[in-house]
Length: 502
Image 1 (cartoon, rainbow, N blue to C red):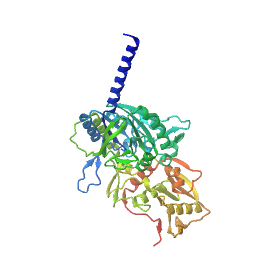
Image 2 (image 1 turned 120 degrees about the horizontal axis):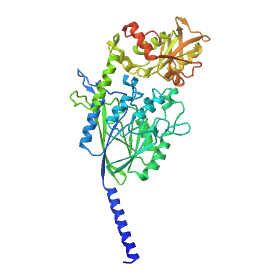
Image 3 (image 1 turned 30 degrees about the vertical axis):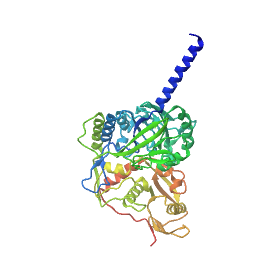
Image 4 (image 1 turned 135 degrees about the vertical axis):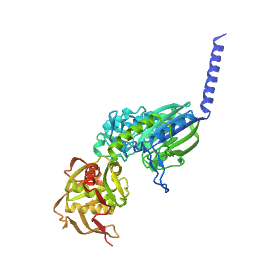
């Protein structure tokens, strides 16, 4: 056989091999994606508050989540499990050190559930950068976040920009993206040395890198459904966005500019289930729904349930203690709620300040008439905020109040009484403004108190930034807990303060 004949046969064999490979790549392949977001440490079930019948059923928790994941894995061969951030903040488990990290038990549970990948959220930085690094070290699954970098453009919290996972004969590229508003969501001290790059520009850079060598490109994001929709419009080459942050319950995938967007709500109440069909490196069919995780005490025991039960037992020993009794409901609602009034006044009196401030959205739960457990208070104030004191002149206080009213920045204020009105041109007029019963003196300095978070966001809430702030070692939670223990019997009422003219 001459060389030309051998060469011809080799070319023929290679051509057939390429044709076969191309044919296989073109064949439809299916993939199941399971996803969670904004679980907020809800590792045990809680009441389904939207159900009107009594007793309300329990929903959520990691035992039920693990059972649902295992059940789907038993019936489907190719499953990918991912989380879109905010695993932390919302339950005392985040205060308990486990394997070297506060809240580490949550990630140990996720390891047992065999998560494949996650993208951090803003609340995963609530404790500190070091704690996020410790959490990522516990995780036996990669931390992806392409646009969270250090000042020298390195990846500072054990994160990497993306990961490529092979599943079911498919190569799936997954890019992590965190909200560009991070500096308005997290205490500034916890973000020292961090930069947040443009989500769209960063995502496009890595999509361009991944698209030629993968069958599917996914953005795993923690920025909210509206921002995800903008990302879908701005970035070319994405197939799917698995999102978090806005707590949006997308019962079915949302299609924007050819990109599917999914999100499960929050608090581990739902598991997102997606069935994808991939042909020629693109999605040819998408079916998705939310699986409601109704709690069932008859589930068989598992490694996850054992860890859940042990952690819950420890927490109950400390946090089930009754620290006071509430007479009448505490219901959040704007700047004049009884619960906000009590908390703001209690922190003011704790440091003997003239004026106290509290951001409305820092109060995270209503409380019903009856006993107040330490755990109830933790769910009202789940953030590890410390008290901060500073001085403002009377003129500055007037400016803060006018700004907050005009901009509706969402402030509870304690220690000041008076009447306000707003003109047609949005000019705010303050009348009979008093502190301690005396008229406010514009030239005098008044002692003030707020949380460190509020100080970090003072430009948004106050319209000015206080100077010479002193950060105390005392937490807001500790101050309110001590006050509730001292008062014990608490009547739900809005204390005298600023009121709108009739």
